[in-house]
Amino acid sequence: MKVLAVDYGLKNVGLASGDSQNQIAFPKGVVVWRSEEQVVSELLGICEEDGYGLVVFGLPLDMDGGKGKQYQLTFDFVEKFKEVAVDIEVEVVDERLSTFEAKEVLSEMKGVRKREGDKDVMAAKVILERWFDKT
Image (cartoon, rainbow, N blue to C red; front, top):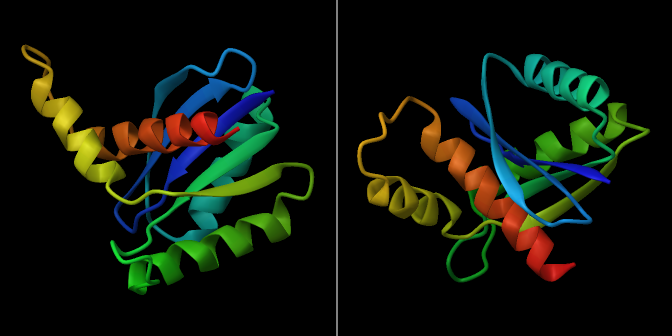
């Protein structure tokens, strides 16, 4: 099954793609956040166009496992997405330190021009890799 991973944010929404059989995650791109409705619509369009059967969202827990402001924003968005994405499976995974890992990977990439949203896309890739590891 094709899997789309989402690193949800109020500026950029990072996306990564993979397949549950081969369990390899690839950076996919970024959706620039303008409104929740716009992001939901774009994600649904991507799922339909590219044939994703599962969307995995990263939930940003605090280091102590607590649920802060960004956790609540993301959780609420996931619930809204689930309401309209009735034919798509939705799962969540702990994304603690995924942005840190993404920044580390990007800093190790020599000679590659970095763009706005790269860390969000790489964070989505980390989220998908974590989901693959737990399945």
